[in-house]
Amino acid sequence: MRFEDLAVTSGRAAAEIGRRSNRPSFPRILERRHRRALTLGWSSAVAVFAIVAIGAVMLWPGPRSSFTPVVTATTGSVAATGIDDCPLTVSQEGSFAPASAAPQMSPPDPRAVWLGTPRIWTSIHPEGEIWSGLPVAADGSFTQKTFWWSDDIVSISDPVPDIAFTAQSLDESGAMLPAQQVTLGGNPEQGVFAIARFQIPEAGCWRITAEYRNTALSYVAWLQGEDPSPQTFALLDGSEAVITDAPDLTLAGYLFTLDVEGVGPSNVDLSPGLDPADPATVDETAVLESNPGQGVMLWRAERDGEPLFLTVDLGGWVAVANVGYEIAPSDENLLAIAEKLEGSTGARGVILSNYTPEWFTTYLEEPDSDNRIDLLANQCVMDMVPGIEAIEDPRLGDIVRGPGYASWCHEAADIALKVHGDEEFVDRIVAELALSRIGAGPSP
Amino acid sequence: MAEPDGLSEVRVPGSFELLYQRDYASVVGLVYGMTGSQWVAEDLAQEAFLRAHRDWARVGHMDSPGGWVRRVALNLAKSRWRRLRSETRARILAGSNVETDDPDSDTDGFWAEVRRLPHRQAQAVALHYVEDLSVIEIAGVLGVAEGTVKALLHQGRERLRRQLHAKGLIDEV
Image (tube, rainbow over all chains, first blue to last red; front, side, top):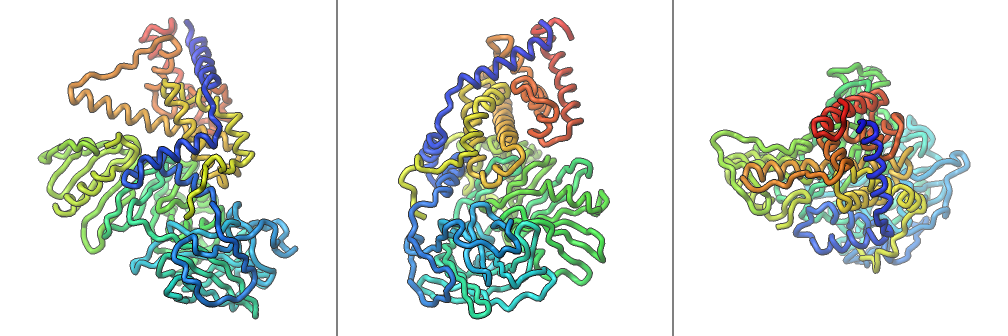
């Protein structure tokens, strides 16, 4: 037989198998995955399907109390004790349209709707704002940015308008706090807007208010607390992994290379903390390039008017693409990298689509120590270090183990884990991770 | 958060439903070539569509949501292949029996050899022969340049030709 004949015949045979396959209704698939997730439970929440099913549930907003504080100044506590007691603000699409000056303007998130009046408006999810996976500061507070528009906010170069932003707890504490920082941002799709950043001290029911020229706009949001475990990482190839949270471990950063066609390999560092909306250093400026989605903004940093590096603000996490090492920091190259970095925030990780990862490291580290866990994607190979033992764990499989080192491989998620640190640390991490598994490996 | 009463009430966007109905069979066929198992192909195809549904606000606005689904499905197949390879390696090390890839037909043999190609080459070959996609379309799915696709197809075919000949499945080299 000739090669081409066999290839074409084989292709048609595979396509025919696809045509003959059973195509269940999509809601049926969701239901099956949901049941599978419930069976696995949180204790084994490593399964990718569980995450998918939970994501599906999240898409279904569920019954909520109806509450429509459109433009009103409100005070007082309703002592909400759970999300069901939290009077989430809901809004119907089309209840408000921005001024005629920007007729094509749409909310940053396609699911969101506008809320407010031409004097001051914002965007919310029509079924209510539920905030989860927010960055957690060292003091345990949650960082959240809120976005606001006004007919009076015209240019990003204008002074920040005198808008008072506050967050008030509707739980027992009744705490009220101002926005920690207010800046202006903008892009062609959403025009110019104010960014009010809050450091919210605790999870629960919060009323967010903007007061501007005798007009107040409020909405009520639910801030989901941190589930102590597990932490979910959305990996670069679209798969996901879960790691048990060790109380004194924090996700410290990502480091990977980005292979940009026509540009070459570029180093990208994803780190918490740096906010490109913060005032730039003396000779640097950060210019908003575009806003592909809610909480995701591309900033271009310049030094003395020359492109320096690109940052992608993922709502607390910032990807910094260095372009000065191996490639020319031209506008063209910066934009090529920006296109590659299009992505979306995950619970704590980030999915970066449309690029080729060459290597990739996520690491967690223990504050004030050298203890550290590395997660390496696309490198599911255990290091065979001379002089240390290889032990078999019934759940994790083979572990290469030494006094200050352990590593193992999770084939399903294609992740290698390496634990470095003192012996007590390695003991503890191996024990904790052995109980929760990482990746969709074989069941215990 | 309140639990939904029934997931059957989940609203599936019409545009997503159209994509699912139109492309599901094609994605299953594509993944079948990469895995050799209809059950696995259906499972991975469903997983890929679930991911698209979960992120439909973003995926639905892409130039080619179907291309995105295919890329995810191919990546899932790749991850599974890597796991199987590691398991096989572990069994060899442990001295236990190893399941062999014993094809039942010439077409099975063809796909078994495709799966031995480097992933990108295998993916390009599968997209070309299962879905009959053009170079431009394959480039869109894999997220690479057209020139890269041409090179992948050329290298993949040449390597495949040698492998198939060595297995006695084709006459020519």
